[in-house]
Image 1 (cartoon, rainbow, N blue to C red):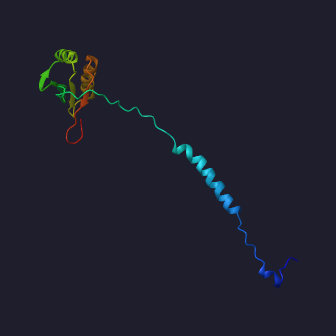
Image 2 (cartoon, rainbow, N blue to C red):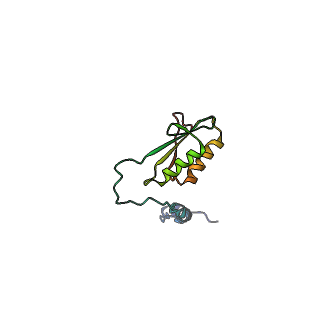
Image 3 (spheres, rainbow, N blue to C red):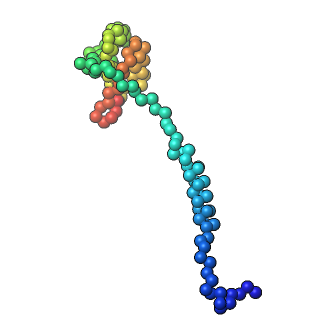
Length: 139
């Protein structure tokens, strides 16, 4: 039998058991190896370049186009026909710098009305198009 005697009580093992410590370190090492590629993942973003040009003295002209619920189109507050609107768009596209287009659509208007006006503006060559929302956030 491996029983200790009374005289063996003074002999203690004072060395540290390092096996649990090594196990914990190996687990942490594996965790860090797995999570390191996730932490270094980069997202490519194309940031705008800074220019040395001063900002323009006056803001660009703004054209207001309103589409009413019945399909009526208002160009800067006055009613217009599709042929007149195409002529206005052609004249505005020829200006330098191009004016901004602020498109406002009545919430009761059909999608086709707004889409046809937007298509005509884009097809006419105007590049700066923005949508105007009312106070409730609706277009």
